[in-house]
Length: 328
Figure 1 (cartoon, rainbow, N blue to C red):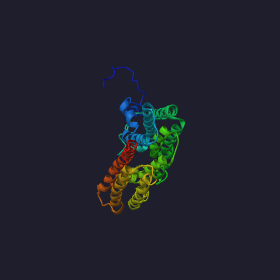
Figure 2 (cartoon, rainbow, N blue to C red; figure 1 turned 90 degrees about the vertical axis):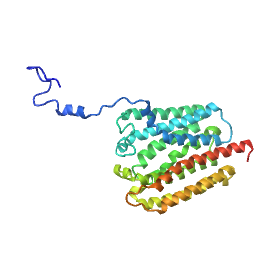
Figure 3 (cartoon, rainbow, N blue to C red; figure 1 turned 90 degrees about the horizontal axis):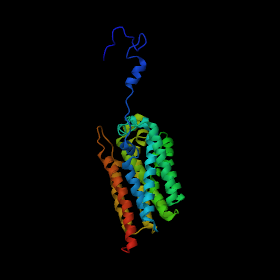
Figure 4 (spheres, rainbow, N blue to C red; figure 1 turned 180 degrees about the vertical axis):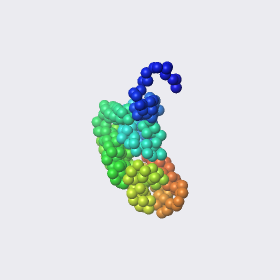
């Protein structure tokens, strides 16, 4: 640092130097670089959005009736954008929580790459735009369900349920269950039993899927005070719940076939995939972790649960296409 010329007046008041309190605050405040498009994209939780887009597309393709390709593309785009907006609002609200968790500390807000107001405004813009465009292009029933799904995730789950009850993911599972229902309604314009069953499949799938994750990241949740089931009830109870919800999931996934809404392709896939899910869930449900446990069975169940939902909804579309072509 250059010295002041001899006799020059100091820019600091007497008794204060360059490390006075005001200057220290400036010195310790991290410089925030302007967020780029990758940070905004990260706010939408793209990996989660992939599953949202896929299940929404499957609901659209499995629905009876026809839809213009442009309107179909618009519907899926609105589902994706709406989900991204809800995810941005989730991260805006939970920025402090994310900063305290190893799994989420590198997100744009806790890492300091973006300010919270930008994330909030981005989330509201995406959410509002998606609902309006969906209403104009695909009807206001589909748009209303999309609006409910955004509110469900960004407020009911994020603000109300998650910090208050260990049943947060059970009730909150409805947030991720809306896409196939929205896709179906975008084609048909009304709600029937079949899209409700698709909603229930994801609703019942969410608890064992998420609790498998919660088992091997429970330390993170405990550190920030989030009452996930493994934190407040312990591993034994969580493992038992995973097994119970998996057993409840299987008949729900087979119900579309039993009730005549799908053909044998989907029915066989639901049974085979469900048995695989049950085998992994049983392994997780009946074991006890040990010190320095790597939680391999829990990680396998979590990974399989994602592939399971992709495969199950993919089989739904294949079954529908086979029926349209007269193959079954």
